[in-house]
Length: 365
Image 1 (tube, helix red, strand yellow):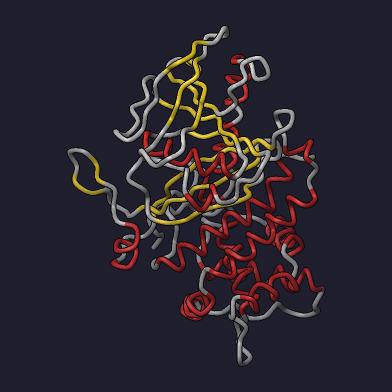
Image 2: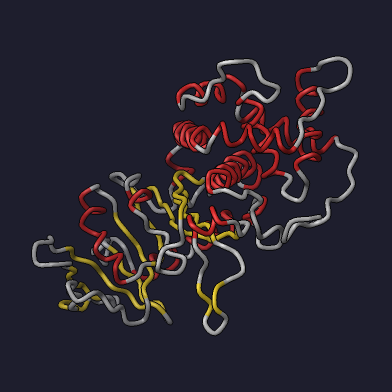
């Protein structure tokens, strides 16, 4: 019986599947996979039918072929691995679904997370600043978030909860939250944070993402009242922001946002201070109907308002990129398959790794 949201797989001759899996194996070669497995302490102490490296590739495969069952994916992976290594004879027998589930539990999500972090670091080292930048002197980044349904099991419900729907009680499925930081030039996702959906719907500004900001970064994002408290830490790291707020931002009681200087381009300078012990941060507010933009780029001559309004539109490409692969596409499977939180995290990191593999084909240098 198909799981909720599963689509019927189209019949293929298998060649395109083998090519896709071969691309994943080339992007994440066996030595790189073995290295992160060892660093995470997941190297096997005895020979197994499903070694940790094969399980990593299987997780990538179930993300690439989200509409297929475990058995179908295992057969395709076995055929692809035999094809890539040019082994003669029949491919190895596909393991059972129960054996795959046990192997996934042994592996855990940590090797997938470490593999993504390493891939993001290597990709940034290869890219030129011109490819990453969309604004002279800055590396323009965007933060966005999405939520994905996961199977309704006691473990998933305890970890992720169920969002409340007005007038309808609880939603049918728990929701896992994925927040991502991506470069606006290449659309490459450079950092991600997984967990329970925050109180603020769709909120993307997490401490884990902001810890990746460095001097010369310009962050595009939506912001809520509480996000203003993050400004001192962001400025201390040397980064700048261009955030979209509501038409009349309502900061918390401890924050002050008085407009004290009107500028010739129609923008205004304001002070933000979250709490009496917090440092003051000067920002500039620009009208961008029906919203307003808040930026730490306060020089209106060096950073004209029309240019900043156009620059903020770059953020929308990141959401499209975030939804471009596998279950992150809204027109395909809306529900992950893992029935326990560790497996959910494996899948989410797997989708990000698949995205890392495919997005250069969609956004070539």
